[in-house]
Length: 442
Image (cartoon, rainbow, N blue to C red; front, side, top):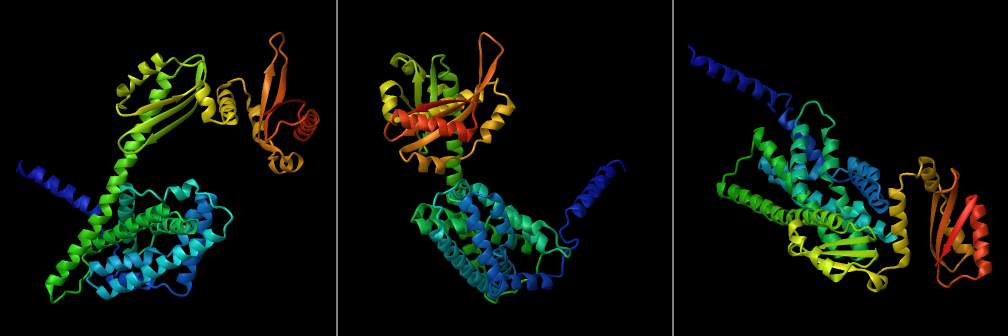
């Protein structure tokens, strides 16, 4: 009797777990699921216009770097329909549904790329923002997102009561932004963006389709049986090879991304610890990693570091797991030839204000609220190339008096005359409503 008690408890535990994770509970009728997915596979009328509008919204979102616009476009997008249709068709051996899904998916893809290409040809903004760049370098993590997102979406599609899972899947799997990025690549002649974006779209499509097949098979949807079993096995082999071809490049790209991240982290730690000099400051750093070797490029100002010291610092690279990294240090005359002086001054001002604990929140707010004067300065002083404005507090050593000073650094193509400088100072003082103004000209 004592030996049977653990077995009984184990059976009870298995029963509780099976009830909790049973996907057959609340499962919708198979035929209604198949009809619903087959209907969403079509791209005509309202579905087609919804796709075009979603593409335009996503293109605008990528163009102005707005995640909110991109998320909204993914919620509108009907692209999941033909992909799940292909997966369902393969899962139940309904190759008419597979052909229909492929036709509609191909048509929707062409329409999406064409629409986004037209938009990016017409827009005045042609710079690739971070949201767009994120869709050009897919990795194995995109595979996982597409796979698990597809599983969640198909589970939700087979329920009697529909939930908010499917909109979440549409956001997570990002089918729409890669197509817009491909359009951007065509419009701007950047084939690297085009290939990277299409590969990401291919990853999402294949693994959403694969996860749909798995759920359909797991829920034991009734299959259409072939008289020729060899044809069914051939289809299974094709699916396996497509998955393998899709997966391998993404693993390699993930490997490169991880290595680059590790290199950057180690390089930042190396620079922080080895270049902590009192009279020398790192004003610009650049880390370049090509997959095997890397370059650490630094720009220094202040007292020059002797070559002997730099050699001893280079000898520390293996300690930071950077044995093959190349350290490039520019300082002195070499540094002046490599960088614009305005960049150096901007770096110094940024560092000073970020470290100055005496800068009060009110002063910081006043800096943030300074107006954009570019158009006005361009009209009044055509020779001006750039400017920078900072508000600061100047404390007197001999008294408790504190003055607010607005500092303006301006760069001109040709050094302005004394009258032009006076006119600039008067205009800035009145325009910025500054009690005390300090102007530095380049």
